[in-house]
Each structure stands twice: as C-alpha cells, then as structure tokens.
Length: 393
Ligand code: MLT
Image 1 (cartoon, rainbow, N blue to C red):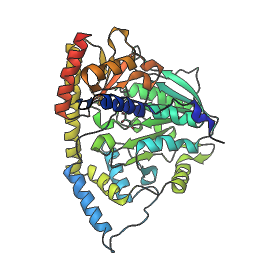
Image 2: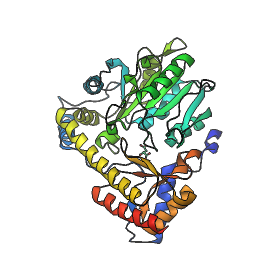
Image 3: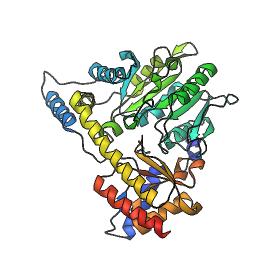
Image 4: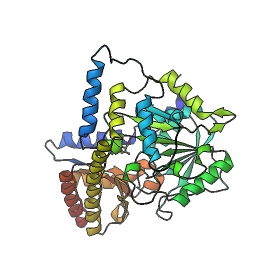
C-alpha cells in the first residue's frame, strides 16, 4: 500500500514545475538567452575563507592521524560553538546542547514533524515556502491557513479564537520578503505559550535583515518555552550546493513532559549520520571574522541586485514589496493577470524566469516572485527586459 496522502499533493514540487516549463521552452527555442530569477539559488561562489577551510579539512581527511569517520550526531562542537557565538552577538545565549547541525533547513523543516503526533493541528501562512504545506500533507495532517495579504503586509497575527498546535513562521518571509517586528513576533510568542503551541521559525534569510528588526525569534523574551528555530548557511554563505544548516531546540521546550530536544536528537541519531566533516569546517569558517565579512560582502551584492529590480518595477509603475530585508521581490501582476499566465508571458516575451505566486498558496495568486540571487550583470539585463515587457503590456 502506498501512502495515499501523496495523492493529495500537487503533481510536482513548485520549483520542479517551473524547471520543467523552462526546459520545454528552451527545447522549443534552442539558443534562447533565458535569465533565471526563479528558484532562490545563489550564484556568488564560496568565499576564500570557506574554500581555505574546505582544503584544510580535505587534507586532514587524507591523513591517518587526522582522518574522521562518523561525527557526533548533533554536529561537531567546533561548529556548534561558532553558531553559539553568532547568536551571542545579538545577546541570544544558547547552550551547545541546544544546537543540532544538519544538511540544511529544508530537511530539518520536513523531518521535525517526526517528533510530533499525527493528529495535531497545524497553522501555516498563505502564501508560504511550499515545503511546510507539502510535508504536512504527506503526513496527512490537518492544516489551517493564516491569511497573509497585502492588507496585513503579508504578516498574519494570531487569532485568539483559532487554536494551532504548530505554527510556521518565516521571517524575512519567503516568498513576500515581509519581516516581523518585535511586537509581531511577541504576539506569536504570547499566543504559543498560552496555547501550548510550538512555533517552527524559519530564519533562513536572517542575513538580509537590516536595522533593528529581529533576526532570530529568540530575541523575543519567553521564546525558549515555545519555539524551534531553523538556520541555514545556504543564503548566508552560498551553501545551496554545499549543504549545511542547523536547528535550535531550547532545553526549556517540553511538551507532554518530554524534552523536544531529546526527541529530536533521538530522531536524528536514528535516521541521519551527520553533515560531512569538511562541510562543517567550511560552515565554521563562515563565522570567522574574515569569513563573515566576505559573506556580508556577497549579501551586499544581492541587496544591490534587489534594488536594481525594484527600480525597474518602480519605473514601470508596478506595485511590489520585499527586496529590502530579503532577496525576494514580490510584485503584483499587472492588469489582474493570473500568476502562471504572467510566468508564461514573461518567459516567452522577455526570456526571464520568475516564480508564480500561486505556487506559494491561494493568496499568492495574482502575484509573482523574483529573486536577487542572479549575477549583477544578468540582473541588470533582466531588469531592462522586465521593464520593457511591463511597459508593453
Ligand atoms: C526558494 O526559491 O524558495 C528557495 O530557494 C527554496 C529553498 O531554499 O529550498
């Protein structure tokens, strides 16, 4: 017997569907100069501090004295120390035993569901990163949607009349780029502590936050009894192909009398053998002084790309949000066009790929996401084509 919950999923994962439409277009138009601002995949290479750490670690693996086999299930202490130091800079004190290293936030966000009961209720913003919805559909869980709309700035707040056992929050948000302020996050923390709920906080885009906005949910008092945070080196340091992330489960987070951190470690040690040693050394280097400066220099390049796209949209008179504290720009399709039609037209007329808002949920219909992760040159070329395309509509 198959898991029939899979039959409730859309035919393909959003970014796989985008890829297959682009593949069809390029097969029919060989030589087309397609520029991809679709999936949020980075283009800046790993930085010198990171590649130097990788080389050193590879050499160690080739010597009998320094060779490593299986590592600790929660990750090497050197990397967990580096992550703890990163949090410490924002006055968030974590224990080493509260940090669990993995191969990325996407895996952890899906896998964390193993430690929760099958019949719990889940609240998920709409629109949102499709992984939250799809992994709960696979498990047959009941999903309630939090309405993220232009009216509430795509930042839904808790409704005291609606109970959820698990709440997903992503800030800066994917796909809209919206960022919760302290008051917004505090409202969710109060709600979760009152309801006995657990917040799953996706902080994958924290490196893009500017000013005094929170980068971690643990900056909000009272969070250690109600939130798990997911971090990633993918967008911060270009690790989309290198793979490293981490999950923070506070010691004080207990449900049904059981420590969620202990359950997570039990889960990980049973089903996961850890992130490669060389990758953990590379991730450690991201938080070295030089490594962090290099990572931030790359983020500045992506920020400038976002500004270039934003300027093109402003010049074309198109409404958009995001791009300031996020690599994503969320625009309204002109003339009430639906988002897949906009996708197809933008691809065929301007050879620019984006992601249709509908793929992120019903409230995403009529919107469209562009990423700032392309090279500066391709971003400038895409922005010019986008502006011409929008003016001609
Ligand atoms: C996105 O484009 O939404 C992200 O790249 C997906 C991911 O990080 O897995």
